[in-house]
Length: 525
Image 1 (tube, rainbow, N blue to C red):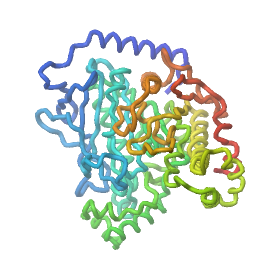
Image 2 (spheres, one colour):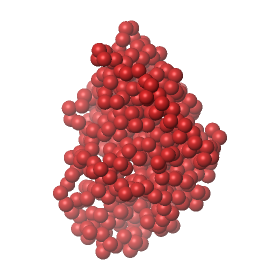
Image 3 (cartoon, helix red, strand yellow):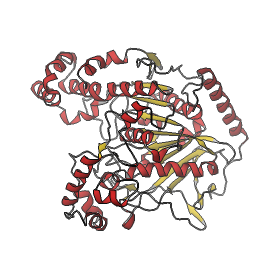
């Protein structure tokens, strides 16, 4: 895709917003009989519903249920249906391999390959609106797209928002020699292939909803961002999107598992699941109960995409470095204090425990780390440890990934910085400030069901600006637009980061110094 000049991008965004405004003023009102909007897709007709100032189509199958003989196989097309299918209820979450972070009442099932689509009420097949496809996080073992509503973004920006489910844990990422032998896609990437199938569904059906199949932005946070890394490097996703947004998930930190190690891990998993015979492991696992598959999981083992396969031939970071990847403009960033969430298990740690944690994590470099992050600079050891985790992995890894992208495509880096951001639901811990922790920005971009506290007026204004910025990028490939802070591209040296803050968004060049990235890079962290 040819690069657009900032001036052209701003002009295009302005025209798009004006066009959306005109259409909104002249659109036909939603049906008064409550029957809901009807859209024909390639699989059949859907009936959605009006919710606030948007229309939503919920629980839409984008692939066949991956059960029975389709367990541990690439997703297959959804079966067509006759008549009008009700699309007013969300589908179940995929089976959770770590059962935290979603509503306990949320149904879970292996039959979970569905998506939710939100569009402006004035959309129709001729509008050609940009489509934003969201991939949720959760370490590839938990989470669901149903937590991320897109009604407000659709109404505010004129973009279509799609939030997807994909297979998790062993159901999404099991690698075994027997599976490799039977699959042309290779094993270990069923979840990645689900994500590509959802993007293919969007490509095939976007126009029916008023979307532009040639203007799709794939977005994700945490493991969702790691999934975007994989899609950028995967031949299975070539041509399925034109922009990418990566939130709190640099490609180097969230690396894919090499095939040999993933297969060995899969064989150990099969034994725990009661399928020790390698020759019969695949058929045995396909016949096992869902509960048995979940109970065989080892939380200490890594989960996620597998490299060295037809679906993901090389590590995403290596594909990007080589220039052999699905090149599109990129927005990448994170929260200022990512590590706060990951340090929660260390609440109340003592100074000695802090030093021990640093020595365990960094070995010979521990004394240097302790000197760089002295306890005297923090209100408690917990916050010092959180800063170490933030800088050593998330922040500086994001800067490195951004620099790698910037050498090849238009790239924009951000940092979310609201020290009083609402915590995730259930994590409003007295005496503990989790502002800017990992996942803090999600409530600012979605109708997020896990927002733990209401916004202040300033925070609501920040959320509006962030939604508009993401949508400007989806419209044109540049996040610049009317009423938004001017956001320059990342330079080759990694400077120019936009801070999103309640009081106003500003560009600053001190990101690497603030997070001590030169120090971490000096010994390869």
